[in-house]
Image (cartoon, rainbow, N blue to C red; front, side, top):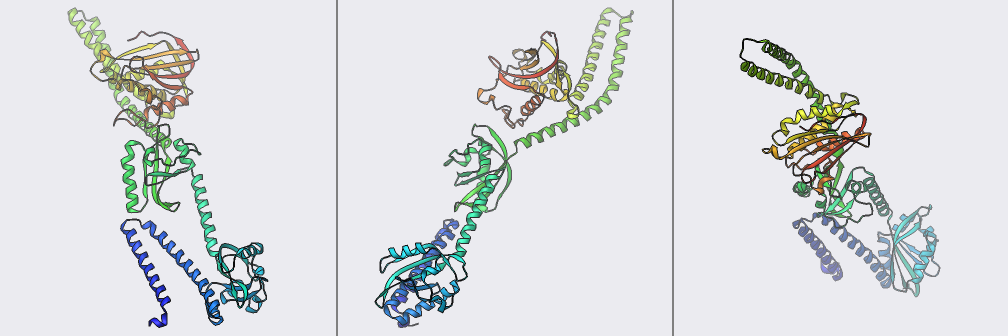
Length: 558
């Protein structure tokens, strides 16, 4: 097309438009190279807004110039403008001209429209009149929101650009309207959606944490409660890794990088989070890349599974005890008959040796010693089978009176193989007490405490260490069972945490559930389980239980 057909001004506009498109493409390519594809949509939106504003400004400019140049040109531009336009007297407000887009939006015929005043099509006549009165001649004003009324009474929102100019010696005003019903409806829906989404998050029992570039930007009320933070506590600037257990931080970083590079959600895994007081909890956590407050971020949903895992561990323990009970019953059945034969024959041998008159006294004494050793070994085998069956009964028993000293003896018998290479065993039973519970559950508590005491002492020097088990009455209606060792003891900084599920000081050995389960068992029968320093060295665990009956009697330490 020749330049004369386009005009120099039109050519400049086309070149400017091409320059803008080229610049936009260059910016998008640069963002893609930098890996910030999340910003491309925002750049395009800004460019579209600029273009729409320029188009709107061009419309006003063209109309104004047309009005000043010639009425014929003015009517041509006015009629073909896509936005609704109206021209009206400033003194009376009477409409002088409207275009086809205005007629379509407001629902009037041209004849009907020219009988109207500007006040008749606005739902805010006072605000519109005030804006126009304050507007100096030749100036324009843009109003982001006005409510107008169509022929049939429908009220709708518009964006208005209005101005004043002189036409044929008189002052007139023009208005260019843009229906923003759809845009406003979308904004309302978006606001409602965001409000509903936030309300949903804040009512979820699972904790929701949003972090951007490793910095926490949002933590839901459930997450705050889970981690021990107050609702009004300012967490801005807190690093996300600060709430992750140090041992799990490499795994968390790897998962975050995977989500950001791959784009998909990370499947739920179990991780340990740190509470405000330094204690840890086990959570099942999933992660997703998301947009939060208009920027790329990472969303994590965490569910506290500490209680569930403790119950699962208890169920596993119960299942093991039940299996052990069945195995013990089978072993007992298989061993009891041979043991009866052995014990019966040992008893016969003992009697025969007592009546033997032809054997030298020295031989009789030596054989009697051998018979006694055989009898003690067979009796111990019988007692071990019986003790296994006692500890492996599980939860099938209902609570009943339990003899504390008797169940302690069973547990000491079972733990002797762990204690003997490490320490001397000292019993100090001041009272024989009956408590409410089951032999299996209380036996599980005492055996666990005894094994912990033994394993806290290194092997090889039993004459230098001791494990002391004491039973004494407290206030006449309670009994205290104390198990003390001479190992390295428990640091005061962790003493309050040792009953937490999954907390353990055994590096690489132990689940951290033993003491938690013991604590639950003791509290379930109305008792307490506490840990203390063992004096100069070692540790002391004290179980206090309500006492049903007692019988005073001191057993000599042995």
